[in-house]
Length: 144
Image: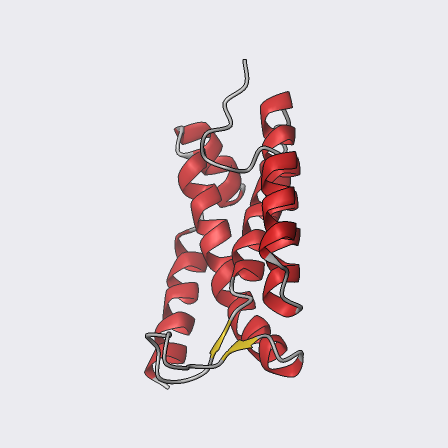
């Protein structure tokens, strides 16, 4: 209950302090565009998380505790979906696409898709190794 009141109060204050022309225009003119993008991604993740939590239970993407696990209660495994959606929406909202940004989008999308499939269906170690070596997702893959 307190969290909902705090969120409502925070949104009210944010709407009150938005300057004419919008927060986006102000942040771009003031040179704090990255703060604006951080706030967008933060809000998107926090708004989408309850829906993703329910989706995890609906599609049975839950990590059940056993003797090898640290947690004592079942926890959702698809939290990366919220992070990915916030990241993608923020990059699209930024609307500055360079070849580096497009490469990051493609690479992160491959990583997300493989991880999501692994969370929902479960992939073998060979499959994960194939994707990581094929797309250069392991830590030592610097190409010149």
